[in-house]
Image (cartoon, rainbow, N blue to C red; front, side, top):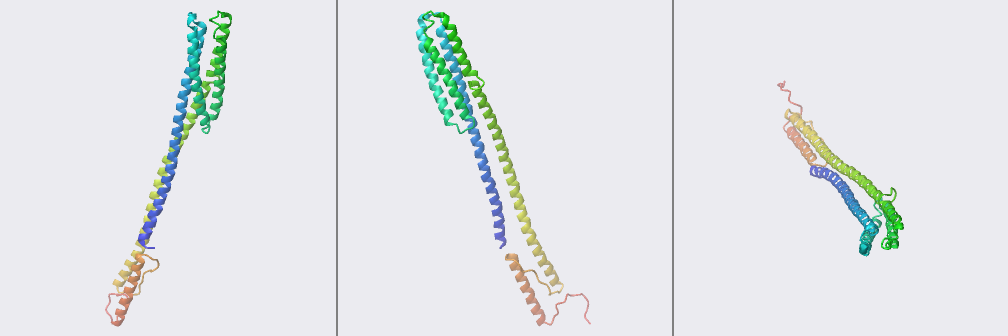
Length: 283
């Protein structure tokens, strides 16, 4: 193989290693990007669920106002406001539930969707209780008001703070998911950085190794030719160099040997021997 071809092959090996490391880096970088995107998605969902939690408390406060106001004439307005708030919260809960159900491929989303459905059912029960008893205070059925308020507060408390299905439990699950994702992101980033470092080191080692191997081969063969030329200088024509290979140095070696053969022929025609010059006069 020609020296140029050997150099090209060496560079190709290094290039292939760098391409492989680059491809791996792109895959790992895409993985990090996807993890970051999911973290942002979960954080956004968490913000939405917190906003929904505040809306639940606001709706419960409106319900309580219908049973505690001193202005009985305004109860109908309070009832209307509470119903409008419930309709808005119902639409928000439907949108959240739809998002959770569409994201069930992401870890805990299926469990969150199930828990949130339970929360939604509890809130529907609370609104039904309110609707059935909304006129108690206006009709001065005060004996039952405290029981209704207690039930509404209990249902709201379950929806918000139940340890298994409440809003706070869902937020905690999201916090856990975010922590897991951030750990995965750190691991992926570390792997990405390590892969790049290892790839660069391997490429450098290969480049240096290939260069040294070619240099050693060339230097060794050229040194043999120099030694042969020095022997010829002293008058020794019984030398030759290795002709194995198929590169430019091999061609040089063949030309060198042909030159020696030509010198031998000339020396033979002139009656000269091919022994080295000893520096002593002949007899």
